[in-house]
Length: 125
Image (cartoon, rainbow, N blue to C red; front, side, top):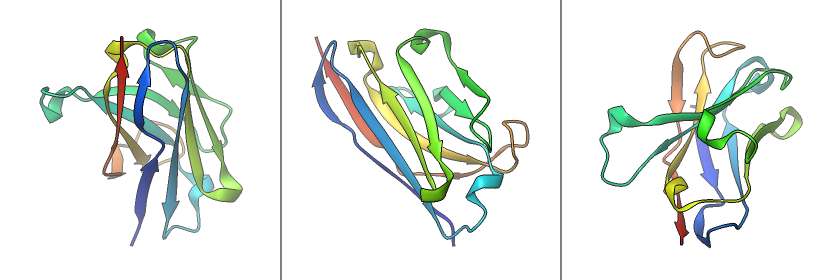
């Protein structure tokens, strides 16, 4: 049974930094799969979840949505089955529940098969 578990959310002020972590357990081949972070703004529908950042299996290819480029960094430690999202210079509009997701394949082309339960990041003005 694969489990995806996020940690690191909380209440911060605008301009602060937060690092989210996501551990994938129950899968020995973590290093064969792409990972990503999505977010859902409170009050919005599940279908409106936004893909924030993705990283391929080896960590050498990343993607960021425009609104976070230059502020967020996704990385992974395959030895620890962990993916990170370093968020700097946070803005109130970054307030959301952040979800860690596992891809079916090595890059972000095959579809998602596992989601974490999410961690709330609240950024006050």
